[in-house]
Length: 542
Image (cartoon, rainbow, N blue to C red):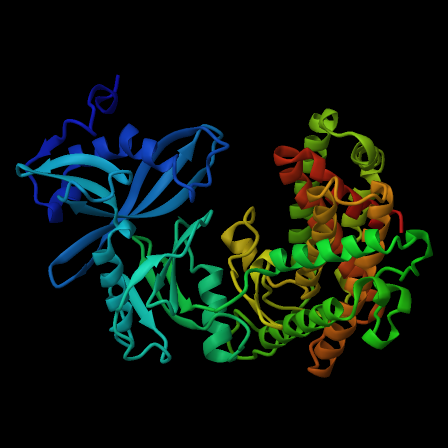
C-alpha cells in the first residue's frame, strides 16, 4: 500500500520542513505529490483527456516559477503515462494557501510547511495568481529571454487590471475573462512546440490584420530543458457575441423544418441541386426560397466570404516560411496516405466491432461501408500529387460551426489548435484550403440531421422524407457557400486548382472527415453514426 493510500491528506496534513519557495526541491515531497494524490485530482478534471485510458504513473518533467515581487507560484509540466503504451503532457500551475475557507473543492493536498497548515491548489482558482499573470503580460519587455517568456501585442497597452473570472466550462483548456474585455486561455494539454492557436492568432493579427478573429494581445511560452518553446497561455480580445454558429444553425434549422411541416411542402417536388454545384442567391429556385427564405442563405454567403478572407490572409505570406504557400509534392502524398490508411483501418475495425449498435438506415449504411471498404480505401489511394496544380497553405484544421462566433450578421473564427487526434507536427502541415471548407460542410450536414434527431416528435413528415429534405437543403447550402468562397479566393489569386481538381479535393477531404467522425459517433452516440455514414455513402455512390 502506498503512502498516499495510508494517509488521509484531507484530514491530517503531512509535514515538511521546507518553505513553499523550496518545496519542489524536496524529492520526498515530489514523490508523494506525484503518487495517488495528483492522480486522484487530475482524473476528475474536465480538461484531462485521458479518461478512456488507464493511467500508469505521473512524472514531473519540469517545473518553473511564475512570480512577481516575492509572490511565487509554480508551473508544472507533467507527463502522464498510460498502460496502453502512450503518454500525454499537461500544464498545472499550483499555489499554497492557508485560508481554510478558500476553494474547499479544489484542494489537491493538505500540507504543513514549517508548521503552518495550508493547501496546495490549482493556482488558476486564485485571483492573486490571475492578477499576477495579467500584470506580467501587460508589462512584458519587448524581447524576453528568460525561461518563462511573456509577450504582449502593441494593442495591449495601459490596460490596468480590474477583475477576472472563469469564462465557463471548457473541455480541454481553461479560459479567464479579464476586465470583461480580454480572454486568457491556459492550455492544459501541452506539446513540445509552439501551439498552433498561438502561432495562427499572432500571425493573423500582427502580420495580416485579419479582422474576423479575436485579436492577439499576448502570450506565455516556456523554454524547456531541451530549449523547445511550449505555449502555456494565449491572451486575445473578447468578442461580444450571440453564441456560436452551431447553436445559431440549430435554431434556424428548427424553424426551417417546422415550416416544411406546417406548409406541408412535398419533399419530392423540391428541385434538387447537383452536389458541388455553385449557385448565386438570385438563382435559387422559388420553391426553396418559399420554404427556407433568403436570410439563412445570406448568412451562409457571409460565412463563405469570411472563410475565403481567412484563407486569403493565410495564403498571401511570402516571408515567414511557416506560412508561405507551397505546392503538392511526393512527401505530402506519402504523409497523407499513411495517415489516412491508418485512420481508415482503425474506423473499419470500429464498425466491425460495433455493427450491433446500429439499426435501420444506419445499419444499412454500416453494412454498405463494410461491403465497399476496398472502394473507400482505393479512393484514399487515388491521391496523385502530380495531377494537382493548386497550392497548400496553413489552415484552421478543425473548422466547424462550433469554432465560429455569431455577432449580429457577421461571424468570427476562433480556436486554431487543429484536429484533436493529430500530433502537433501534423497540425502544422500545410493543407489545401478546401480541407477547411470540407470541415464546415460536414458541420452543415451534422446540423441538418441533428435538428431531425433532436426533435423526434416535432414533425408529422416521415423521417426518411426529412432526411431527403436535409440532403436537398445541404446541396443548396454548399452551393451558395462555394459560389461566394470560390469567387473571393480567385479574385485574390489564391491558387486552389482548376475546377475538377477542386471537386476532387473537396470529395477527398469530405470522405476523410466523415471517416474520422465515425469513431466518435460509434463510441459515444451510435444513433448519430448515420450522419458520417450517409456522408460517405453520398460520395462513393455519386
